Length: 193
Image 1 (cartoon, rainbow, N blue to C red):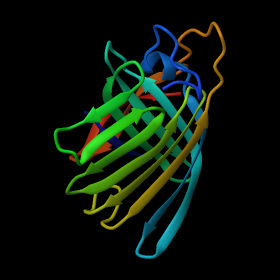
Image 2 (tube, rainbow, N blue to C red):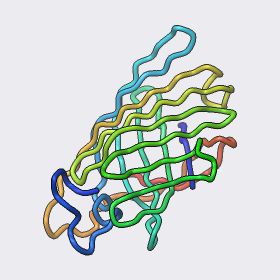
Image 3 (tube, rainbow, N blue to C red):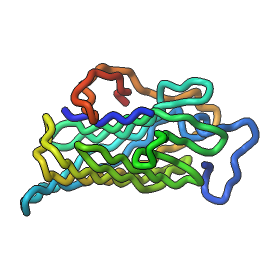
């Protein structure tokens, strides 16, 4: 089980409705679907396929965690958890260093994380009813899970049905799992949806 931890928009053509913010628009019912990917190292390639989930949790007045859960067939879990601040339409996690950021603005996902250990990039979109996200990680040093030079690609394709009068609809229980981050393994909570 591998987890990657980084701490730190409305429906097409529809403006945000009054009294809604990023968390109320995109939180609640998790997005579920597929995740496809590829691990490559020195010319060897392994295609990945499995179940993908995107969920918002641990919300407070102005911050929330977004987790991208990938349950890969015959490999296990690769989880990406990002904590950031939100406002009416946007989510953002930024450090003073411009090499570390993750944003969702105007329904567009954009992010980059560069350290001595790895380079990661994020792109895609988040809408009220569906989300696609592509993550690419290149490991510049050997980690507990990946040899030096490994390239990992994950492509999430998820959706959810929003019904009127739903409660928070999260349907997720919290569980403690090992979280892999730039400074090694730690334990952290992620939703089990």
